[in-house]
Image (tube, rainbow, N blue to C red):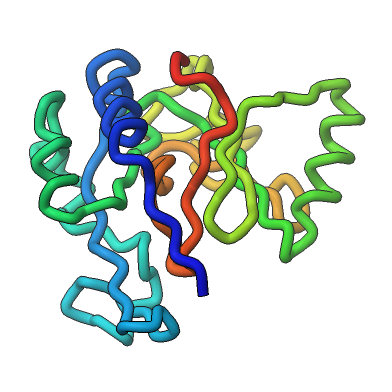
Length: 194
């Protein structure tokens, strides 16, 4: 098993930009732990082997913004061996389209892009081989509430079809340069500079 390590300089630059320039809300996630040969993986939280969200498990109460990392604090977290971070979508005013190719997401996304004559090129390749497409939330709705729906009730998770979801509001995603439980890195496929 190959376990990738994020470039600490690029990761620090990205995280600092995320907080100080783009005003995103970023918080730490528990470490992904492995045995000596990398075959056995568990979460650094108290659930350990029982944790269903290895690599995606919040280390702080992520609903409490007081626990989020401020600019200038990331180097200490990285020096302490923390590589995974989450981005709160609502507080970051972001919408993310999450593509899961294992469940037909590539086909759904391609059909949607063809129908709308739209093909974004900037995305994050997730550790599992999926993709996250980031968009600013330009709707008139409260970013924390989610997106408006025909029923008038805000939605934070909208299925666009098999393996393709639109996430907003009280959701978080794993930040670029974090390490997936598979050993792969969440790789940004865009220039740093939203």
